[in-house]
Length: 250
Image (cartoon, rainbow, N blue to C red; front, side, top):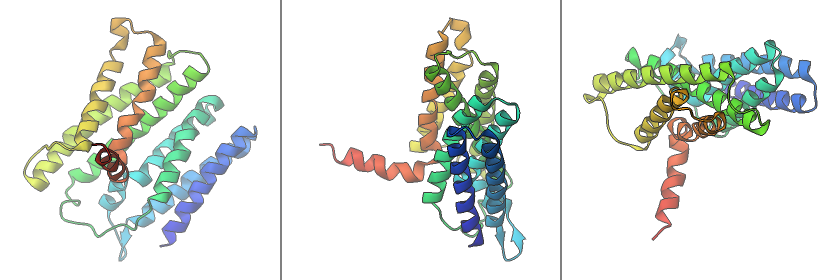
């Protein structure tokens, strides 16, 4: 359970980094962000150890705990490029995802035969990388809207393209894993519907310039792209709430 305390530490460091940026302590924000990143990686690695054996599948399937690491890496990239404003728009979803991971904290289970199939870790890791790019591009697009700059940043557009490519690969790997583990490649569920909506949205975004879509409209859609991705990553946490809300309607 030592990794639980390190997970708490990493979340506190992320939150403190965000506060330091708000109070214009930029150097302290970068140092704390880097320390949080290291602590987060250490906590995740420790989750994969059971009886002196390391299981990559246990680490990879914990998307809730991998996602903050991806966002922290992206935020660090922006800060080291002296793009502090871009960094903080990535730091905001980082704080959110790390807090959700902390509030949803569970101990890792035992590695099953299905989770140890080689394609499972690849599917989870690539999907989480795509989610990190989606949340980062959503944060940057929202920042562009708040600053009235539209959406013409080349880096943000590369994030959108990278997210689409990685997410497409993850869906293929997910279908392969489902076929190897359950003998069928696909089934309809809330998660699969959310995944389909994410794929369609980002397929449209990377072609938006071909139809002359306004930069502001593109930025709005890129910001909204984080919403279905929330269901993909946090479906276990959100599904009971959504079903409860539906159940209250006549």
